[in-house]
Image 1 (spheres, rainbow, N blue to C red):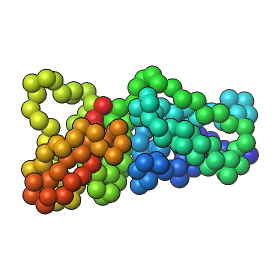
Image 2: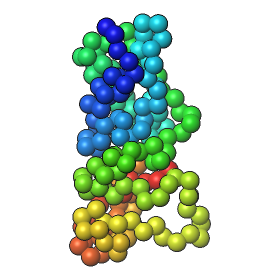
Image 3: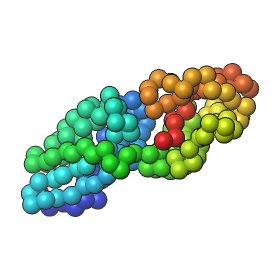
Image 4: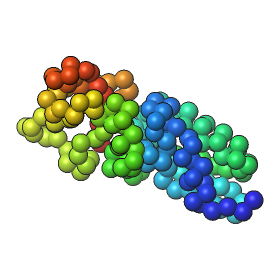
Length: 162
C-alpha cells in the first residue's frame, strides 16, 4: 500500500472526539505527527489534559479507523510535552464548537488570567450576547466551564483556554 502523511490526516478527519462528537481529532489539534518508519505507521497524539479520560477511547478509535483503512502495522504514541493548548484548536474546530452550542476559547492561551484580572467575557453561543456570567469553573468535562447568558437565560459550556 503506497500512501503519504496527507492521506493519513485525511483518514483521521473521520475520528470524532468522544466527548464533543462534532470535533474530530484534527480539529482538536491533538494529532501531533504522522510518519512512516520503515513499514510502520506512527501517529503521535497529545491529550488536551494529562488526565483526560477520553484519551484511551481516542487512541482506540484512531487505531480502529486506521486498521479499517488497511493499516495493520501501526503504533500510536502519546506525548505530554509540549503540553496541548487551545491554540492548537483549528479555526474550523472553533466554528464547529460555536455551532454545537459550546463557546470556543476567547483568547490565546498565552494570555493567562492573573489574580486581579478582569472577568473573562464569553459570548453566548446561542444569542451572541456578551452579558454572561460564570456559573462554575467545571462543566460537563474538565476542559469546559459552565456559563449562563443573562439575556437569553440559556446555560452553556465554554471550552477553557489553557
